View 1 (tube, rainbow, N blue to C red):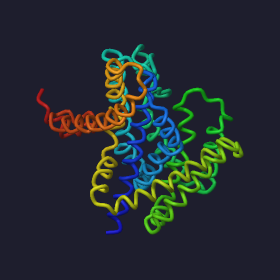
View 2: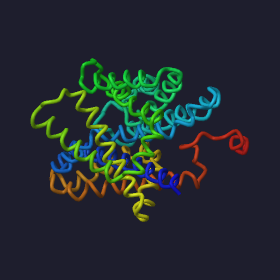
View 3: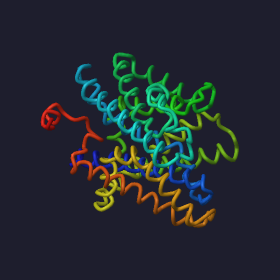
Length: 340
């Protein structure tokens, strides 16, 4: 029973991360069209230190068992899946923004076929997280024989230096690799003991994390008392404690557990498709409401719900219509079953 609860709250935590990401992108497109409510933007901004660290920490924990597999199995079962998904969905986005809808936030996306090659070393789209996961997994396995505390300290230092803008890195995806690797590494190497501790004391963890997160925000924005990189890493850790403790508490409420855990088990279809949906829907909304920021109080939540729901529906339709290959590489048996 304890194992089931633990898995449930990890799924809930991943569900939280994807909802926060969809909210963030929805408000970015609302802001471009001048219909983003300032209150929503501020609240979303507060969650910046938590969104992706939460996703990568949980992903690291869930990837821990894969690190024990032989290299051949590891590359074939884990890395090939990520490479395949990155190729399929980066291409889908490129086609969408070339022929259907201009990406107003990154107008160049879809403009040059060279981007389909360049994406392998310098991705510039929301699909970057798949690329990052592959890099994180390979790097973590390569470091498996290294002294773990030393590697963690170096990863944390890289994160602080990057968050603090001491390293001159222009492309956001390259910055993200250095910023977020420490969270994946921590989840993979130390996640089991931390998960047990949070599961046993969720209320204390949530309250302590929230208090520390609030205090750090006060120090950073009112007193300017903490160096930027250190503040970012400390805020991420406090935010993780807050939301993970909250996820355990949520897992004890059956209706909430089922809803959020479902999101957590189905983050992939939402991550890969929601930006295309949001960009198109918000553009349509903007033509109807004009530059009326007050309308965003209603339209932004509706777009978030619609984008998540449609993303999940597209996955379900794909699975039932023979297009499951969009989310899973076809197996040898499936390829042989396709008529010539």
